[in-house]
Image (cartoon, rainbow, N blue to C red; front, side, top):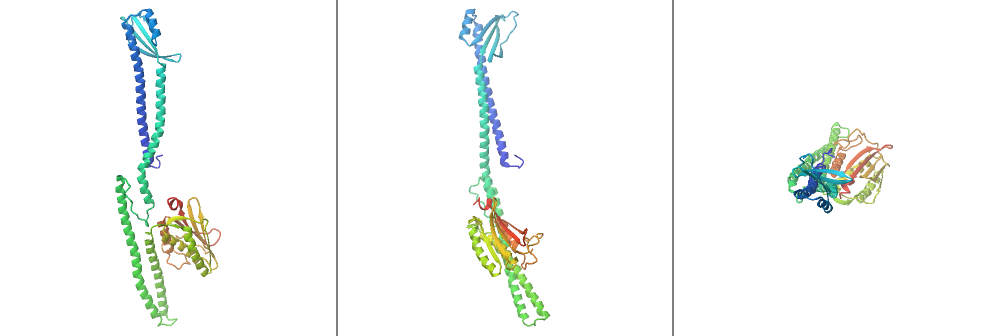
Length: 428
């Protein structure tokens, strides 16, 4: 049980062992005390009776009468060798009876007194006491385990609260931990985490502003350069080498503008990560967007169909981040699917995930390349190679899993978006 180094399990075991040991010692002490008290009372009782007999000389008739009145077997005999016999208590079992025997010499060791006492009832009481103590110990063990489990759960509750807040906290949801209901022992930890959250949030904010600001600053001079190249281009004839150089410059400027546009998109995505999740019906949201993509596909001489296995899937989600992934996958599928080809969207619900599948009929891609890396693109792509990179960042911020793989038996690729149910459904 300790192989996983579980603090709670270790606490339960140590507390249960300590309390069980304490209970065992208490019950053992009580049982020993009860046994000693019973036996000492019996010995005192027999010793008192022996003293009464030895202090006064009884006749045989009086001895016979004492045997009838007292619960003892009394025997008085001569001590022929005058052996010195001290008060000796002997224990014996006769005919399933427990006997306590006292031998005592008196009258200058001339006489020997023997008193037998049947203490079977007392023995049964002692035995019952031991059985009851054992039963109490077993019941106590179950109670101790239950109590230790309950106490450990209460002790671990603040840690569970912190763990849940850490689990739901990521780059896009840097909410500070509420220390109102936390015990004093955890306030310093929460304050340290809140300080770290502030620093990370500030860093992300500056990074976003850097991307957006840099992109905006670059767009202005590039626009001026493009305009001047276009004006100059009008002065040269079609096959002039200077004209070809100017056209090449304009093409390069357009490429730079596309990359700057992607940087702007990345900056906006950074801002979208701070969007608070909203409770939406994801099926309805996708259905509305799919109607628009169906029109877009028809305008590009492509087919687009969609099917949802379930009518509703209501979760807390950051819509801007989800749409960034969703639109990127569908737009890529439409772009790489040839004319009159088919792009399909399906949903699957299994035991662990709600999965969105987007399938195209393109030529597929080289699976050895990491298309989710920045500036990584296929040979047929004309973009800057940041679309899937932004989709990957959005997926990590949301807590979903995205994947892209080639189809097995047909040309094309399948993109998937998986929503873990234990994060998006069961906790909502």
